[in-house]
Length: 225
Image (cartoon, rainbow, N blue to C red; front, side, top):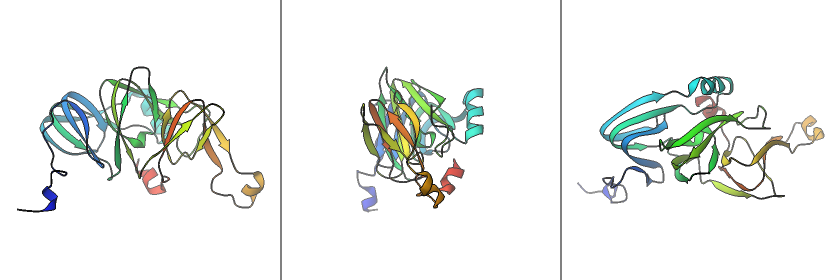
């Protein structure tokens, strides 16, 4: 049988070392040797001796997710083998987190990560009840984290005296040591006249970076989280 479908670019090669790699722009392959963590329902294929189990967030995390609709529904993957992960054909990126790093990520953008990473659902200080939610997941430790993004992400540097304001429905994540607050960019007069649709943003101050995607969450996708 002959087809461009069977080109080497599409062929799944045997893993040579444990851990995650990009299979292609839309999926991540993870060679499991013990345990790893992934968002529930993101596995698209696997081979080998693997078990998939729902992973709890702890009482605090469950309560926060119940209140806000945000959170990180996870599963633990255990055993020996290879698994492939994807989410709605979104673009995939691998971030290597080192000791001392801390990355704040919206739960909807997490695909999978190494068990050496720790995460905690924390309050986004100063953000109030915004459209993006009051809580995000903060990753620390060391290891690799795979993120998904609808479209090509934009990484914007944040510098002292040069804060960045982002739409809470478009933000993917940011350096966890940045200071966060709400920024109102719409005048009272504009609100009375019907508004611009861009009334409140998340402001980030300090030194680091913020990642946004080139789209906002639709009501349908928000309800699906």
